[in-house]
Length: 154
Image: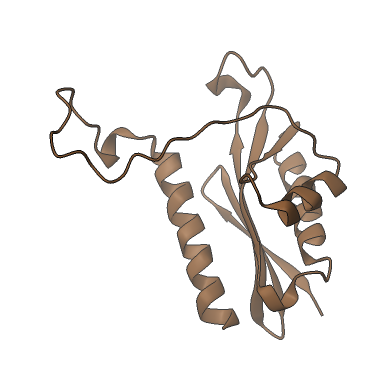
């Protein structure tokens, strides 16, 4: 039997876990962004930072249940738009999000920046303290959730 537990981590982060026999078998982590933080987004929105299901529990609608719970939880928290980032080539995740009514809203581009060049740039490199506190917390939560999956599932 699958049940979801809810954990509000600060004002903007939410972690939902799917459990089976008291073991975490999946989770979704969401980040709520109030409308006032950006002028180009006049509505509150939420990001699905990460969603993960243990390999042996995939294909059992757990991802669908977690994404549905995330949508309702973020709506109740005030979000009017939910965004999910999917890595290129992750067809299972793409199918999950599309089955829940998500569509392509934007395309993001990335660049591998490691390893570091032998000659450092002349401009100062920002340290971790220069990033917004919420982003640091969000990253820590995702890593903690991934660690929990390793501890409790395997």
